[in-house]
Image (cartoon, rainbow, N blue to C red; front, side):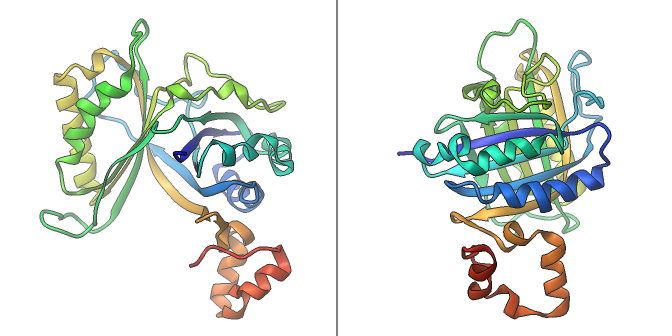
Length: 295
């Protein structure tokens, strides 16, 4: 059976600071989620500032208001649908839903069909034609269909925007999640908004990584211009673009990472003290009853 992916689009509670949201999601909620059975991998992407000034038609909504913006994206992979069943049926999943009300205003969970998440390119950050300031740039673009457009956006994106992005060697990773096959209404948490609305419903999530902040953003602007000439934005009515403020792998190779077991503060304390013994499998099994994914 083919592997499958679950994507969560998340926004923080209105009375919670961004700093507290990141700490709680990573070190409390995320540590609990890392124990849900069946996870092959689990990565948290903490979203930073919204990027604007893309060359888009004026009628494409490209601003994320406090009501519609997202603060995090979680990506979880499973070996197959049988493994994903633990997301809904396990004891830990019930605890996760109880905890969501401490953290999230909105939690949209998309259980995507096999093949709906695809890595378009993934290549070395060093190679012919790669230049820039040496700093890596990580972005997430959310695309939603225009009112009245009844088709599938994904083929249009794959025929226009993604080829234009992939042609520049500064782009090191390009991954797309087509959300149409996932229904967030199936994940229901009291006091948390799990319902799609006109404002927060999107059709595709694109992950873009590149070398050189200015180079990556300029490549994206040029790709948007190319896609616009090819008619993409006749179908796209809204677009949000975020910088990735932090990326935290919580589960890898079906095992929690050291971060996923301990949280960042504890792990940084161990590293600062040079206490390598605390990273040993025997101690992890003693404390948590499991091994950790290899460092």
